[in-house]
Image (tube, rainbow, N blue to C red; front, side):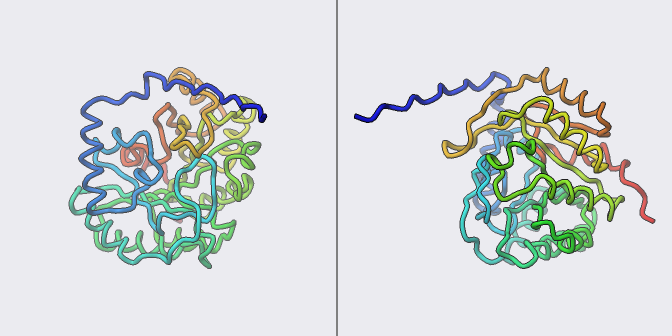
Length: 300
């Protein structure tokens, strides 16, 4: 008779993740609008636990290039498989949301699209440049994939002139084979370096999740690596398992621990760090941009 495998006891969600009634109502109201008018947002597709906070502030992150990813990161709930071709209707849906929600700041992200010759860079360019043309008052942030290290694709995104370019490291190098298979830590660092080297006038940004089993010394080394790429903004947030199919949470960090890591990251030379259990790479991005837009270097 086969021996039963004991499952690990589920860690209890700490109290600081519980949202208020107002935020839950705002989340439900925004979700209804998105389901009707904007089918694809990463807030919904990735089951972001911070939807209530951002939705109550009228902020969301658009998921362009479809809802199917060519990679299969074990922390992410976006579906893995063969994606459909880019949908030109995505731009119309984003314009609709800008109008209906009076957006002043638009965040765009996408699944990895390794099936496309340019990884989807031209689609990013089309949407960003169209927003700038039709809504010149609206600022844009793009959270881009690594484009398999093709800097020519990153040039296409830079050419569109987004106000912020974000590429997440996600975790420490030793956990890439577990959590971020198909990606390379050094390649992601190269992306961050290239963005700042080629476009110093654009704010650069990256994010790291805590709670996947990272060791402190490895995390501090990541801070050093981020500082060496002259990245403007680092976000640190708690990893939360979005569905039963993703990696388990190895540790819940307290708000006090997040504050300690913020101090350590600042001491490593990163100029601005946003750290907390509910912080995400696109967390309250408009407010972050408003506070930090003066950081961008002047154009040559």
